Length: 238
Image: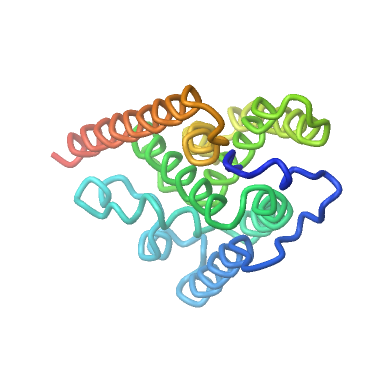
């Protein structure tokens, strides 16, 4: 969902399959391999296995294991969880990677997941994991695309579809204790911000200034969530 792509990349008749190295397939392979390894080492629903493989575990993050803010986006809890997220990643990822290019797609995906895990660290004490933090970031990035290219009917249709999907997921998520709503919200926030400061076309000085502003906003939010999570988890440890 990066906004830096050139206009020719937004041809809605173009195949959504990347014509070179696919980061989407790489991310899929990573999470599938990790799921298989977890299955062979106690099971993906086993709490100890989840912690061992890097699920978001607030006390460990507060003690310096910051890599747990990245690892959870490649870890899944149960077969249904990885199946749904893998299907979503394949179809959404190939489409968005084709629009944005592999590098910018990867950055938005990872920055979305990072922000989602930071917000979850700040406000959710439960162990959590899943690619949905990053997927919500991709949904939000598609909405940003709709704002950046208001006259492209294909992009407008995609943006409207993902807007409805985000609202439906948030709505039903609030009725399930098993859903990490803060992770999803943080992922959407991170994806929307990253889509602007990474990918907005550089056509004017005002847009460059906007990109810098959104970059600053991203870092301010990330620092705030990290500080809040550290303080809450730190107090819980003592």
